[in-house]
Image (cartoon, rainbow, N blue to C red; front, side):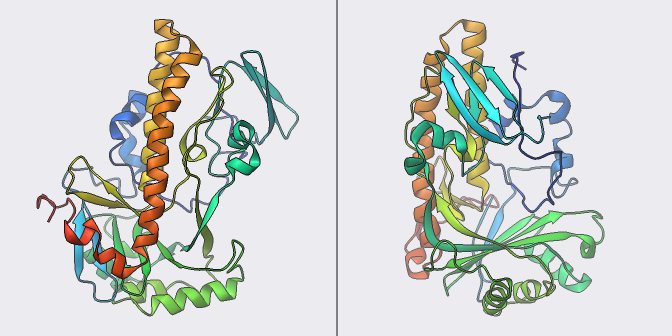
Length: 371
C-alpha cells in the first residue's frame, strides 16, 4: 500500500455492533477496489460475498421483471471504534477533530466518509446547504428466511444470480436479493432481503407506525405475481421492517481549507435507488439497486489513494492534489446523484418507464448484446 500514516475513526463501538441489515453490489469500481485493499485480503474477497461459492463473471446479470406477470423486461449483468465526531476546526494547514468522548486528534488531512448525514459536509458548507433533499418515495426493507419450497422457487427465478429487480405497473419496485447463504445446498437456510419502494407524498416523518408499515407492506405485496407475492407475505408478523424516505444531495464544491478537509462516499454524493446506470455504450443500460453509491465510493477511494501517492511520493502540494481529486468527484458525484434521483422517480411511473432506454433500447446482459 502507500505507507502513509493515518488513523481511522468509527462511531460504533466494535465490529458488527449492529445486525447486518444491508448488502452491497460492486460493479464498475472493482479496479479501484484492488488499489485500496491489500493482496492478503483481495485473495479472500469471495468470503464476503452473499454466495462465497459463486465466482464473479462478466456473464453475471440481474433480471428485471414485470412484477405483475413475472415476464422478463430485460436482464443485466480496523478502525478506532466508539468515535462519534462532534466538532472540528482548522488552524493554518492543520485540522483538529474532536469526538463525543472528549478525545481529539490533529492531522494534515481529514477525510469525511461519515455517511449521507455527514457532519463534515455540514462543517464545510453549513447545515443549510449540506442538508439532504427528500424525494416523494418511501423505501421498506426486511430480512427473512423462506420455507423450503418457496425458497426453491425463488432460487429458480434468480437463474443462478444473487438478485432480481421487479418493476410493477402500479408504480412499485421490489429488489429481491440473497443476503446470506449458510448452507449452499439448502435454500431454506438462506437469508433474503427484499427492498420495496413506492411513491409516498407524505412528509419526511410519514409512515412511522409499525402496524401501518406492515399494512402497506402486505397491501403492495398482494399486487405481485408468484412467487414474489408469497415471498413478501411470508415475512413474520413480528419481523422488523426498516423504513426510509429516499433522499439525495446533489454534490457541490466546498472549501477544503488548503486541502486539509475533504469528503468521500455517501458524505460527498448521497443518492437514491433504484437507478439505471449508463455504460460505455450509448445504447446499453444496466440497472443497480444501491450499487451506484458503493461503486462511486470505491472510485473515490481509488482516486484519493492516487492523489495522496502524488503528494507523498512525488512531492506535489497537498492542496493541489486535493483540488484535482475534488474537481473530478464533484462533477461525477453531482451527475450521479441527479441522474439517480431522476431514474428513481421514473422507476415508479410505469408510463415514463416505458419511454426509457430500459424499454426502448435494452440493457446489457447474458451476452445478448443488450437486447
